[in-house]
Length: 158
Image (cartoon, rainbow, N blue to C red; front, side, top):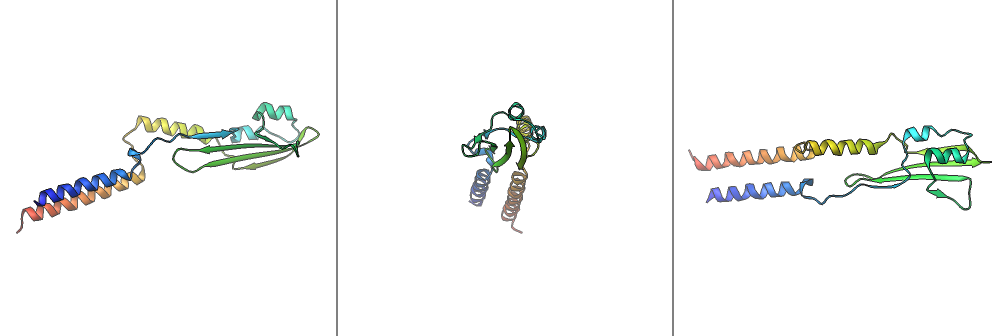
């Protein structure tokens, strides 16, 4: 009778710990919106460049304000399926068709390429677990060991 209780407890514990991992969740896609901005592209923009040169390097701006036609805003949003949203913004101000001001916000090296590389390596190494999953697995193993010890003491009462 005790074996049945302990076995049921171990099965319940394994099911509960499996629900906490991402193994049984729905796949969420990465969403990219706006103009992709990385440090290499932004460093090419210099004061004194005209609008055509800027369009050649960065593409058309996402926002051109009708009240301020000499201000271009490039905005990039990246929302990974699992993780925090990243926002990058570049604001260029023109005077007489030349860049006079550059305002950067959260412009970093291209994270998307590194994210794609990580996804490829995760597909290759499916056995690789996150730190949280490893910790949960260790806790489950420790609880299973405690249950085995309790089972042995109940089995052999001395």
